[in-house]
Length: 296
Image (cartoon, rainbow, N blue to C red; front, top):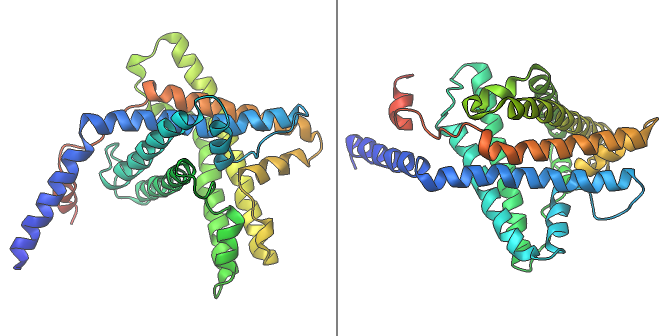
């Protein structure tokens, strides 16, 4: 095959991917994805709030939320809908990372945000797999945080790798979200022309509280990863449940746990409402191959 044939083949693939990503079905999947993301935070927030009030229940994790949903009426049907939404949100992460519909650009900040979208796509793809496995009657959970931490720690320079992941988690997942929530930067991603005055007020309230709360939880997860790296102990690596329990162990822990739980609930509600509020312009004006060629 000549180089010109390869280029033409690559362009055809680029145009096909461009057309598929911009289809009406993709837009519906993306909006369903925001609902699924909201549920994945809303349920753990609800369970954490129950724990803060002294009511014990299911595990306060996103995979625990899958099991919790399955145990209730129409559980399997709800999980099918959840799986479709998780697939849609994973697709949205890939579209934002590859096609850059929001115009994040190719500078350092834009590349960092697009890498974050790619990481989000992988994370929600993992939750989609967990949901599909549960529906198939297989493994009911994906590998826990300490499982992959243990795998990394067993590698040469593994503790450095885990420590780097922890730092990235703090900077990219934690502090960045706290900054975005506090500055209300998230509003630029919303279609404000569709908002009533009341909707705008609720978007700001739920968005700020929820995004800052999620940022705090992610920051704590990053700190726990660094602790696991420092002590070479994968058991110190915790997910959302560990971060919330870390809040509960502080002075006035019950109040802090309840506040964190309400924050996750707020983020879940905000995400569900983003199915209506969010700008979902999936593609730019040109296919990715043409767009990228202009930057070479």
